[in-house]
Length: 349
Image 1 (cartoon, rainbow, N blue to C red):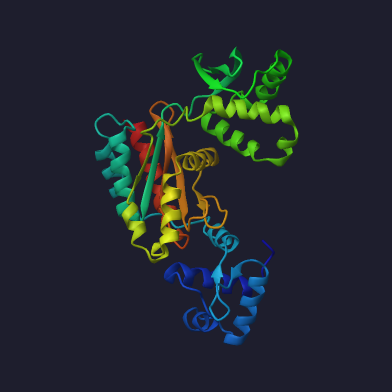
Image 2 (tube, rainbow, N blue to C red):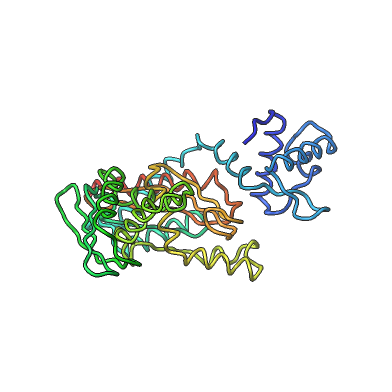
């Protein structure tokens, strides 16, 4: 984002704050009246026009006010990096509720995921996503492929703890031994020492990289790895979404087409797994924003998520799903506190 003057930054953040509160396009008079901006509406209007030209605001209709774009929301979220912590009393209550949920085994089972999701949905007033993987923290040392049929290969996954897992995968055509040797060499540096989550995320990214598309063999290597890993670290019961109805009541989804996009985003499990992997790889609270080619497809939806876990009892992600105008200042510390509490409960158990 272009460096903004203090005045432009103040007006932009006021516009984002107003949008989060109302969901409506923001006008210069509203900003002047509600945000103690010591400028005339005409001057504010000029600054808003400059921000629009810079790609930070857009005007849905000529006569309407302006709405923040994804870069504007990102800038606002980055300013919240040093977010306020959840009050100690509330943190203790979250901890106690989670201790009750995970007792007596302190394991991340389906029922624990579901109840945790209900708790987060209740605390946030939005939908919640909770995901778990008991294998996700395991690291690979080797990935090898053996031709079994012209259209089939055996993928051999060797983990650093000595465990070996085999999977059959389908291929479009047989691969000659020379190409297979080169594929093994290409994948060796990529695979070794990475967790399944980190590796899956990296491979997905490489498959969308135009530079790798040019090198046919490199792309073939990543396609084979992608098929071999698949959803290995995420079973069918490993992802739970609670509180969908809270989203459907929001004005953003009153339109049938927008509601359809929302439901499609919530059912796109493969995409959700990818975002979960990114959150695990980041190791901190992350924000994923949808809308017009965003990270959550075309749905007007955002995900605030954080990783939790104990390597022996499972790792995963907990997050809040809400409209793009969700209260990030509230949701980011809430998600962070919940993830920390789950980690503490798992380690304690």
